[in-house]
Length: 218
Image 1 (cartoon, rainbow, N blue to C red):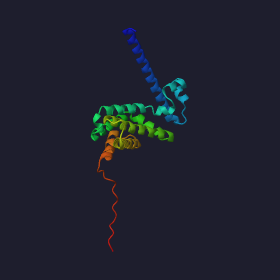
Image 2 (cartoon, one colour; image 1 turned 60 degrees about the vertical axis):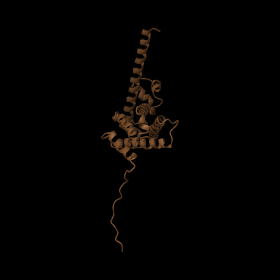
Image 3 (tube, one colour; image 1 turned 120 degrees about the vertical axis):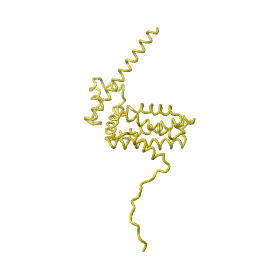
Image 4 (tube, helix red, strand yellow; image 1 turned 135 degrees about the vertical axis):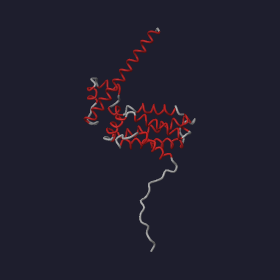
């Protein structure tokens, strides 16, 4: 094939990719609109497809199920977390660097402020979706542990690496939940910074007990 032909083929592939991305986005937007209007359980794949004027068969080219529409972000989040960790090779040995990576990840999550709030509200209505959401959070932790192990030259995460990944990622997860429960008010990064400080500080004070009256000795 000539160079000109290669350029035409590349341009054609780029156009197809853009069309596919646009249709995927339209299906996702239509699904969210219907979920909010009719409820997740009462919305069908047929209704989502009809809203974009495509067939259900076309829908299934992009999503395995209507549940996958809600969680279509998972792969992108994992890829972004990996990228951030690989750009910071000191994260495995420097706690300050690791905390900064997770704060950067929190900032990335907060970029989709309204979709994040909408998705959380929909997920909370269905126990199966809550379970799927927990699996997503678990995938963050496993990704973090695996990448830290690679940086440290290990074939697999050891106990210390697993604990470090679990504790810091749990802190971020709690920060996200608190932020969502408060309606996304304020900056997620600020909440995440406080949570990570609590999780990594060796001298974090516990809750104070209320002081009662001292009993006088008889």
